[in-house]
Length: 153
Image (tube, rainbow, N blue to C red; front, side):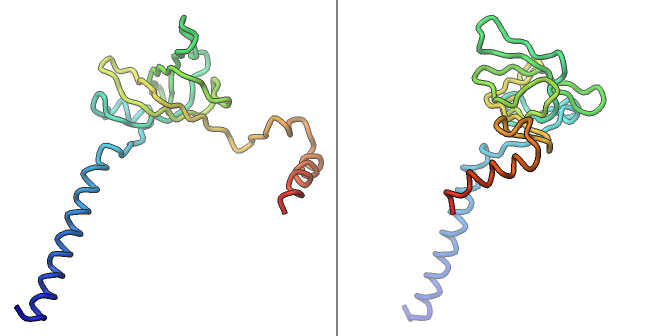
């Protein structure tokens, strides 16, 4: 075989291997994608039962209940209009999680229409202030921030 044909064969083999690696990676990651749904989207076009998705919205005031085991909570995530999805979660709740706050629940839709969350991500608003800085004026907070960053320089 001539050198020109050997190079061409090598290039074709390399391209086939590259395409095969890309297809294999896409196939392996297909179940890792987690789609984001709002409550109104979940009611209009629900995902398949058991499919990993994220549900985002606001925790409805008055809906947060702790179950008898002390670890499981039930609450309702609301969206625009009257869209609401009941959610159950077992585990440690984030510090910022409370009624009336934003939440992103990672989990799956159950056959009964409820959402079983495996993980909760609490969202804070743009007015978030760390506990250490609550009640301070802006000048006092800037002074504390300056003192804590002096050692980092």
